[in-house]
Image (tube, rainbow, N blue to C red):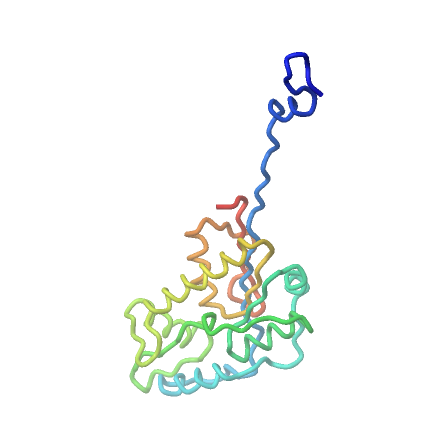
Length: 221
């Protein structure tokens, strides 16, 4: 409709002078990092450094102890996640299978555990392979002295954790939650990178088997 001066009125005028609609920007999805279930390999032993090196090689190939049930919270996270990943190690894959049921997931080399090479201590020093034994000694030696032998260096592992965090963040930005079923220490290394990116930890269950850390952002970058 036009007035006497030939100008549009009504809907056209409303378009030119109406209030702008607010733009809603969705926050990226949450990223949940889960440690695998309990492996089948026994830790009831006292080992010298060479014995622990051999034990760790077997641990890297072992699957899960039978009879475990994933916590309900993880099954819920898997149900709600858009993307689900494991590492390529058996204990991680079996954890993902237990949590996801028939739902598919992707296994990535990028998510394998950071190495635990033991220092060559005198052979009379024999420790348990538990976390408070060789686990702690080897981790501190690797982290603070970069003692790695033929295994991955600390520098390379940190760079890998940064790449993993970047990858997971990009998936979360696409919309929907991301679930990672992998390894205790490397999950922690990813966590440190996510914090640098502005993620806030909303769930913390430590290093226990099946334990998780969950990170969220309230706004989109």
